[in-house]
Image (cartoon, rainbow, N blue to C red; front, side, top):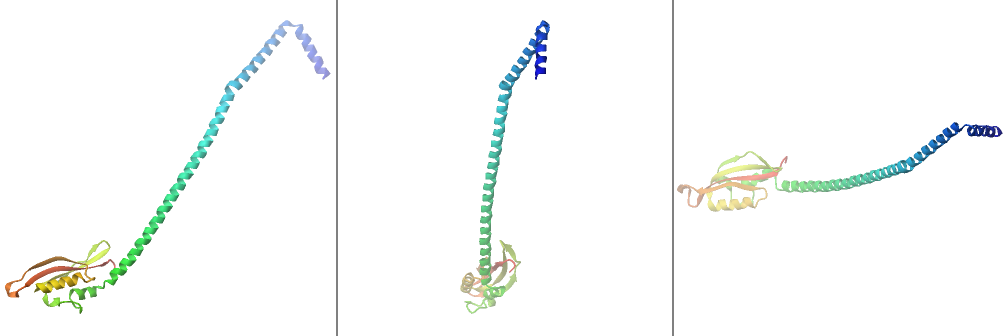
Length: 213
């Protein structure tokens, strides 16, 4: 320490004895002070606000990111709930449709077979009010038709009978569950030699059943 002190004293006396060097030292010291002042001013007036603004932006970005993440999670959760509810509704509707199909098939199967349908159409059952076979001139079976999951099997009848008998026959068909409908009914007067009250008739009697049955 004593050596450093001696050196400082030597420099001090040397500077005092050299005015030019003293001036240069003062200018150097002044330059250093100016630089320090500029550095402080720059740090305080420029860098600090920018750092504060940057920190605010970073914090805001984090808030927005967290908010967006939360909104996305909420949206996904809502969408999931909606899809789950929709799936449950569809499963319930499917179960109802399957149950309806089951009961519908059982209902149509209970309406009799093709053999039972033929017995009804040709009045072969004891409940028939007349015997239509003796009044038929022509019998033909049409091509099966598909309609809404069902098959329609038509049978065409053509013949001649008393009007009262045809009326009873039509009532009998309409009240028979095996018969799904009567189409193309035509009634016209028969020739005079056929007898009073005799009409010529033509009709299509349909049986409807589930496809694949």
